[in-house]
Length: 507
Image (cartoon, rainbow, N blue to C red):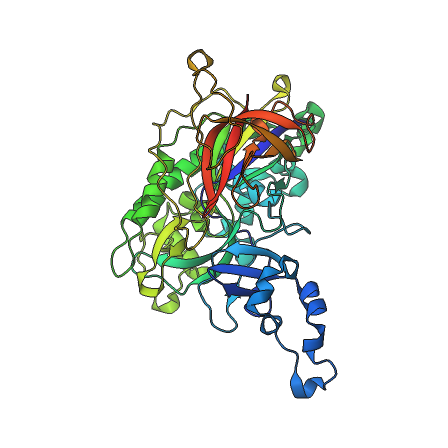
């Protein structure tokens, strides 16, 4: 087994659904631009006398939990699981919102299966030509909508789960935020075509610049001579090049996506911010252990299928669209062989009704892997991307809708030989620290190697907190709550209006 440290940072809002649907009044209420998620048990206990349980139910019915609450109740945190910045698009009775997947303590996490599925798609797309597949035929796709492409997948990865190449790849669930609802916002999402925007959808999603940590493991025993009967030893290099292949797949998609959003025409709202976001990702220089990937809701058909390989034969592809009813126009479709597909994208919208504009795509993350034991590493870390450096991040969601979502991409470090002299320590801060400021912070959390510190003079719950990331922390498992550490500010990001995340390094 070879295990790698895995870090995921959101670059745009991410939604991975829990499978539930929340309803206004039943599960949440809205107030002052925020969404308050009910703690049902606490509300029932506090409002027991208002339930009218002494009256026949058939005459009175049970009141909605939301109807039991007053504005004064919003001051009692125990009545709510957590509070989201932003609101879903509708404030009408029975408005809906789809929640993000969370652990039993209401902390969002990234299922390893979501990330492994994205890796699988990238490997299939990049490896297609290498295994010498014959020209695509209709029977290669099958007829079952739920298992479409299964025959092809078996040829690429292996005939069954026991003989599948990705049996050797294990991706853990990824965890990050330590408080209930932390990192989540309420958003308005819409399906956008190049000529119109459809009805809005309410989503609970991760904001940008939220980090998660986990592990990625490759089981090398499955490639030993004794395991040759599994039949995938000749594709071991696919896993050795996993990150490079994932980045290759994403780079090919980024150009197509940027062009798509640049070609939107009225009456559809302009999507220039999203097009600029994609051009920026195209120009980003990454290390050999990093890749841009898209996961979760909104990834789209091209991000979850064999994509261009299915579109080479224009007439066969149109038959697939018809057979699997992929064109929403159905029998009224005016599609012709060679027409672009897909014809719509899911995006974050900001603004009211006719003034709403697309401001961000869904699902883009930065993946970083690091070997825990360099001598045992199999994934290649030799080749570095040679893409020009990005412009200053410019894509964000207005704070009146959700917390700011900067494109948080890697920054070049200054060589030690030209580091400026250490600044004097700041005893107490009266304003948010500036980059380069040094201070002594008290540790109040050390979760999976990431250290959170209080900043002297500032309230960590309402003003700002400091963080030392796991991959920059030489003190993993060596600190505890209450310890004092000296650190220097290297990056600032505003998580919500007036509330700051201060990234630091030791020293």
